[in-house]
Length: 603
Ligand code: ADP
Image (cartoon, rainbow, N blue to C red):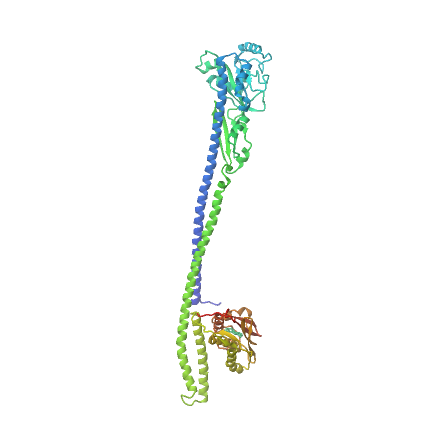
């Protein structure tokens, strides 16, 4: 079993990762809190909006009920007026005729003013022994066929005697004894004993057997009778003036006065023998009652001594759709706003974190650059002194040297030379990163510069038995560059070609103008570079593993510097390479006779 000991670095890395994870969790928690708090506020608000919508529906319901109740009362008061008018006639003359009755009510224009009124009648109240005299007087008045229906012996008869508005005087209602109908009888008794107008429950007229109707009665008393007690009043009853009203037309008319398709009702006769008999139902009732937010309420009420019950419904449509949907839109906005706010906070926290990290990175980088610059400056002076002294020794200033001593000093000299090269490169990197490289551009013949570089590299190439071919045209290749830095560019490229090409290989250097560019290409038959690593060779301190790298001195900053300098000249480097077949580095340098495209960079 292998035991793995954690190094300090890995422990620090793990700790840093854990710390970063905890930070992200804290941020996520804060963002979640903001999201939930905002959402909760919106939910609270949406709920209060919902309550206010409910209140609106409820107050619309109450308003509709008020309208209905006022309408009912004022309409019934009109009928009461008609009753009192009819009863007034009998104070003038107790012996009226059907003709008097019809004439009296003609100005009322019942047909058009009271379309819900089936008829206005006078029903004579008779005890058994009054019947024959009554019939005789009616027959004499011009109604010879008048009979009391239904036939039969009864203690009290209340036949309909005079009628207005009914289809004709020979109508089926004529002579009908309403006292035989328990519903009417109850109302008549109540009216007779109380002396007040009284309303019956639902009944059906002989003339309109399919129409639910209520009848209002007002008693007419015999003259000079005492009317102090119910018994006295009943005994003095001469008859009743009655108004028969079609319930359906009555309610429909009431609802039409304040039409609202979101209001419906059911009207019950609370005193009917069949308890709570339905006498009217609006068509929209069931549909409205089904809706989830509708308000339904049943209210009992009494009019003219009769008990009724109304179940009313108000649908949510009574409140405008936009108003009703406000709770949902508020909630939807809430979700959106909470998400947006949470996202903004997340972005703010993240970007703050990013900026802090970036600032830290910059501080670290600056510290590194300063260290690099300091170290390379401090190294350069002693290394140069070593070079001078070793050079003096090799030139014999220290006396004659043996062959062995000379060889050893040459090795020391070469190593010191490489050391100085690396120190110089480090210095350039430090300057570059600090933005302190200033190009002093001038128009020169690039061909001459290339020849010079080729000559310098030829010794090393020949030591490796390599062929270094410089294909430079005879004519001048003018370009505006900083000669010192561009020399460094060409030197790095040719030197790399030499370094990374095995013995006996070929290095070819070409230069040619192409449109508005100057192209300098260094091609070798060397080890080549994998495609996926071709970009990283331009990174600082990057060396690829290959069989030649181990035996080749290098710092991994040559191409970084080369690339940066070419960029400062406004150009770029193109790499083409195939592992095992060689590489080709082409510098694209902008040239433009007008000077455009050649960037004057002084950093
Ligand atoms: P170095 O000092 O290592 O040469 P460079 O920055 O000049 O640093 O090059 C970076 C890496 O790119 C080298 O280590 C080498 O692996 C690769 N490289 C550069 N030029 C060539 C080339 N002509 N052929 C193959 N590999 C190359």
